Length: 295
Image 1 (cartoon, rainbow, N blue to C red):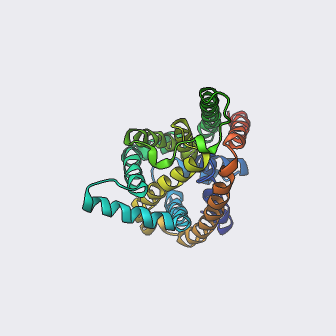
Image 2 (cartoon, rainbow, N blue to C red):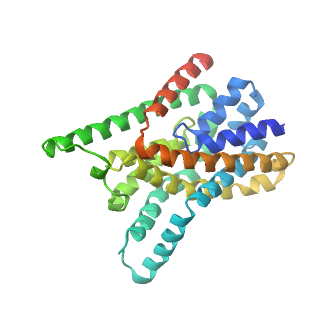
Image 3 (cartoon, helix red, strand yellow):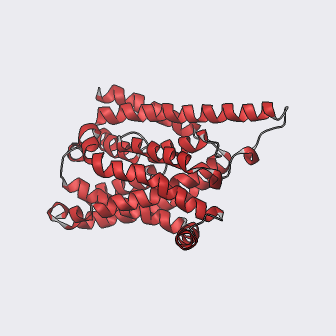
């Protein structure tokens, strides 16, 4: 059904690719297909399967790793949220960020509940995942191009003053309409091959955030979405579908949590000085090669 070795590989893969802008769902389809684990590939797109029960544990573990890494941020944000309920005002950056996250979570949350099952059964197949992974690379390239053009315009307006990180908007200056747009962008991650973190980062970059703040908002926004998706499906793991894979789910979850924590630490440092371009190149190359392989 699912060996412990496969659980370790898939768990580590989930922890890394959920946060790297390369699509965890796409890789959970493509990597088993390349390796030859055809029963896992087929289980991805079934209406109900042991594999989906197993993935529940990986989602919860990934969200918990994010929660641990951003624990100080979440303590401030949660306190700020309840403070606004009492005062009915937004007076601090944390209070504004709390409500930006609420607004951005709603579109993907509603759409995920309504369409996740349909999208998964239709598109969680190797060729479709390869095509969408290629599209994901193009989206990342487009986001960087728009960001670069905006920086050039700022330099021109500043009469030759060199642009830099200080020219980017702060996260707490986003308005609620912009947060909603970023939330809507998350819906694309329902398609195997489109990265949740990648598409939300691009949406943030287009709205003027720098890479570090775009990544931070993306990871904060992903935490409740991934956690809720896992908790929503917990009955699958505890029910008949989980029979025979609960031990593997625990091992896979531990690997996913460790990989996710290491990944988010790396990426937050990476995006202090670097861009999405390496991931765009990877997605295009891996996508095109996979299209040729599975066409």
